[in-house]
Amino acid sequence: MIKVENLSFSFPQKELYKNISFTLEEAQHCAFIGTSGSGKSTLIDILMDPEKYLFEGKLEIDPTCTIGYVSQFSQLDRTKETTVFEYIGEEFIKIQHEIQSLCTEMETSSDIEPLLEKYQLALDAFDAIGGDHFESNINKKLNLANLMKLKDVRVSELSGGEFKLIQVMKEMLNSPDLMIMDEPDVFLDFENLNALKKLINAHKGILLVVTHNRYLLNHCFNKVVHLENMEIQEFDGRYIEYNFSLLQTKIELQEIAVAEQEEIERYDNIIDNLREIATNNADASRGRALKARVKFQERLEARRIKAPFVEIKQPKISFDIDHEIKDTIVVNVSNYSVAFDELLLDHVSFEIKSTDKVAIIGPNGTGKTTLLRDIFNNNHDSIEINADAKVAYLSQLQGEVLNDSNTILEEFIDAGFKTYDEVRSYISNYGFEGEIVNQKIASLSGGEKNILQLAKVSASKANVLLLDEPTSHLDTYTQIALEKAIEDYKGAILMISHDFYSVVNGMDYVLIIDDKTIRKMSMRKFRQMIYASHFDKDYLEAEQNKKAVEMKIELALKDTNFELAKVLVDELEELIKLL
Image (cartoon, rainbow, N blue to C red; front, side):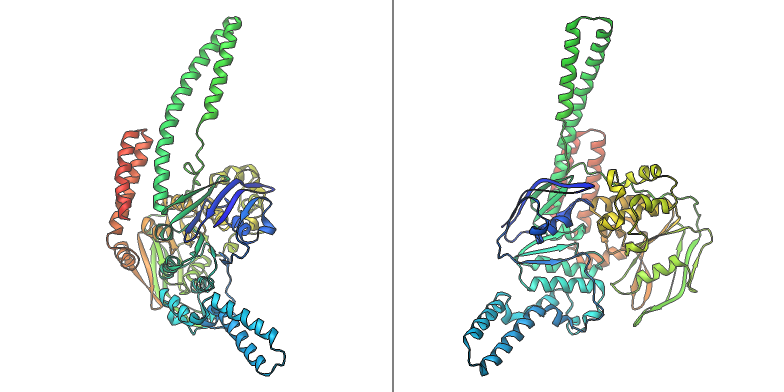
């Protein structure tokens, strides 16, 4: 067991945690969730290196505990000649070579005792990581992820998504006591995401995974650790059940809040009457009565329930347009081709109309980002942009759009805002308030940087949006806010995304990359294709029914109809059992 007790941590501009505690136990696969910038990656730093980062609190962990780690910012070394098999088996191969070298040395050495000791230590290390079966174990993992075809491929030739999966396999095969992964799903295509799901579910040890991916959250974990507003809470069970428990709590709290508000308003009226009487009558007893009532009112206000995990503030994302274009083609791609070491896309043609919302779907490394960047730069002979189109771009490489050396305030002054007060007012809608606005962009989390990109896209008031993996690093609350903004947007969107929910909830159709070209696919066919590969037969219908009931509950809560909300919650509970 790993135990964190009364941990507090802060930066000069921001307090992250205040006396938080949680435990991780054997066989727990734990989803670590929380809004962007809440301190998830910092908490991982503390677990990985308490001597450096643990200032206030206690961490109980066996000194022999081994920790495996997969970073959200892992970089592929294009110069490495190592094959995938050699890369995954690096530790095994290293110990194997050491054993062979010691055997050779012992054949000729006159002082064999120290060599025997080293030999035994090497054998013990080899056994500890399942050395006798390491080749078959690597093959099993590659087969599980459907990546056996990559076994003899050089690591330098992998796509970013493939490399992330290979890293996960490598760490898992080293059999750490605790495996930590920080957003391992970012930029994975649907096939690789499904492979990651299989790897997580097959892992035997303790897992702590930072993720905002709703597909993984709904299918992989038996515990949730939720970090929010400097507090933490644990839930033993599935993420979908955790959300259900939050909804039940929300109904209870809103019902109490309505009753408390009525009581507060009643006392407001009494206090107003007492003030009026006290103004016209100098009787000391009237003043004492007024003072007592005011103190009671203050106690009522202080008693109000604070719910850091229920009422989480969503950013107010909205994509407004300066100039709307009616029913015409805004982007025309004709016979477009692109190649790097090999041909990626060949003779690609499609057009986007002024209100089309379209997702580009394809495996990692098939040229999607290059195509989107070429459309934005508009300097390719095969691409034509309507003269009335105003185009905004969100990049998966955040440094393309954001200047890391700027503060948040400076970034928006550079973007055309006139005053710092104007910037402060605008970006407060996106959750950036207080001292954080003076932070350098380089110091922000990946999610915070993507929210800033969304804020810049929104401020442009463009009528054509090019979005490259806009949900990457975003917490689930911001993802849902983004989906709503996309739904309400009146212009055209061309979006690269591997997030199934964002595609099916917001797009009109998809462009599928297939055999170096692109073909159009209806949403109905796309859903059928994805569900055939990733979900049980009746999952779609149950998911849609669940969403419909959740909408009814939200409407009931808006009308303060708590009895109806409770009836609907019982209906929702039965649907969740099907999922």
